[in-house]
Image 1 (cartoon, rainbow, N blue to C red):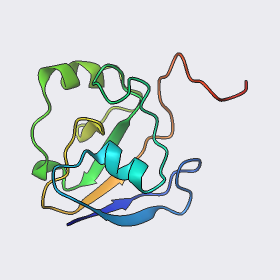
Image 2: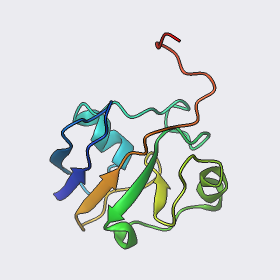
Image 3: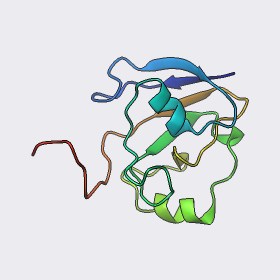
Image 4: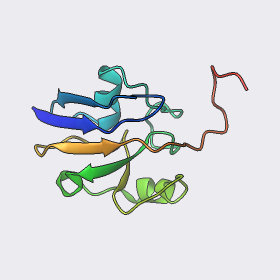
Length: 114
């Protein structure tokens, strides 16, 4: 099992988190399985950027992003060289440190009042 450290996020994970995930699981699924409600507006189909994360440690252990993922990442808020869409990045054997950006671009966010 691979250890995932999630850095504190003011809304989704105020104290941060530490848990284990099986290799081959997407980072998004691992977060959701541990009650970290990261947005995934396209239902994890690689069609938006709402599940964007920054992989602070362990980035090189992930398989390379596809061209489709790279094209979408170009539209993500707060893009960094080690950004990934969590629905596409599969956990490997190396431990990860993940940061969920403060903002996301979601034009159709439901369930939130203005």
